[in-house]
Image (tube, rainbow, N blue to C red; front, side, top):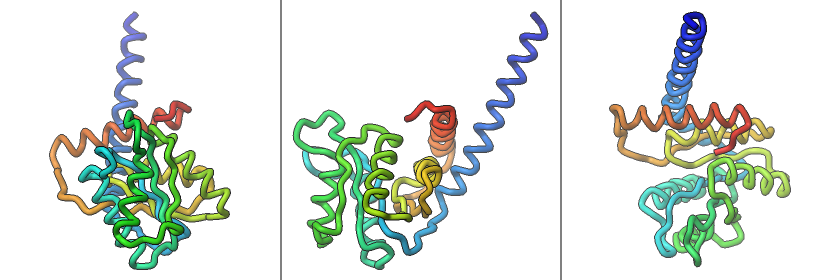
Amino acid sequence: MRKLIVLVLLLAAAGATHLFSLARSIHRQSVSDEAAPADLILVLGAAEYRGRPSPVYRARLDHAFDLYERRLAPRILTTGGAGGDPFFTEGGVGRSYLISRGVPAEDIVVEPEGATTAQSVTAAAEIMRRMGLRSCIVVSDGYHIYRAKYMLAAQGFRVYGSPRPAVPQGGWRQWWLYLRQAAAFTLWRFGLAF
């Protein structure tokens, strides 16, 4: 029995060490803007409220717009499903918002189904493959980019991360986000998509 307890404690310590190490990598990625010329700007969805992007989503879309205006990519892909809204999807709301900012409709591609990061990234990768695209700039909140980038790179794409501008929160709340992403990333690596 004692050997079993020691084994469980060792496994728990190894798991915690792995998560904290991964959280440090996620933190480094979250503050690194790698924006470079690419085939597409991929904006990961966030909440929308009756056809309007939430402040977080609007900040992501505004950042993608700035990258588009800098001519780093000729098109933008917005992602995200309905999230319970019977009339709007995050991807569709993102498209409408970008059109209102002056992006031509033909330069915007929409993925309107994804309910999770894994679903949105998988669908975006399929869209990119069908379009013959090989690279993208992922726009999201900083803590979110590491996992999305890795998922796309695992499918053969060249991926650059570009976090939306945000006031750094610091402290335990920020590290909690990093640890949650580390756990989600680890589960994804074991075949459990989130």
